[in-house]
Length: 213
Length: 203
Image (cartoon, rainbow over all chains, first blue to last red; front, side):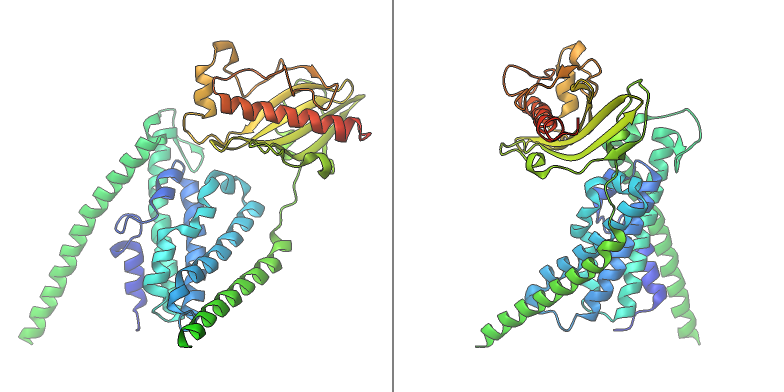
């Protein structure tokens, strides 16, 4: 099965955005978006794990018996999560601390297991790596946007830089996280609807031109 | 026969993957390992006294290990600071309350000159957010006992390894299990300080 890189990019970033479209990886999305930097950190960690696990799973897709595929996937994913955890503990301990238990919990993140099962186990290596990259980027962008929104309104800062003294503490709480998530999903669905209509209209016009020709 | 072969194949593949993952982690471990530092202790030392450099001490595993009760209190770091003629010790203790409260960390400071506890702080609050959470428990407690994170007026001389075994408790916070966790941190600290530092010849 050959996949177009542009399609993979559009799937990961928009059409199958793991956070806003598939609503996967909800726990870290709600818990870690109190600050934008947490969103970037978590997004990068997930991207790395997704790319590496997708690559290995795709390489071994004809070797791993289907009966033990899930334990095998978890074993592979856990190894890369451990590497990310060790790396962050060494080079970015503040981000590792801020992520708390959500960093090791990447092992059971639905996005990673989902992509392993739905994509990497059925597609060639390069496509699987690209899928991991774009899914991870889609997740990172979503978390960062939510993090910026909540940090600006909840703490009056962005990436730790103070903007003003105005704060709405609601946005730093769990209820604020749910509200923000709902708001972003609503906006995403609205704009995605517009984008879909535009794409369909384009396709329709192209079809009509073909028929005329 | 085919079933047996299939099972054998599953086990073999999983074993090979596990071994490869283990080897990969073993190779990366020396590169990414973070040696413990005294920062976890020194960052909690805010008493207004002359300050020097904190240095880690080797843990005496004979006395540092987890207690056999449910709290599993253990000493995970020990450090020493010398400033002028004063010596201070800090112990990082991990403890939990009967499974209802996840791991918490206390840093308990001793004045090495007179073997007294001079300060104690909870550096990591592992509260689950449930009814035994530290913050909720502290809110329920009397106004003068709310500051569970600070024990500035704490001053107790260590005289025996079983200093806190009976008849002594730290400030009550309104939840038995939380109190147990706090209590056990102090018991373990006194036990370790007495055996490993005082009797061990470091004091």
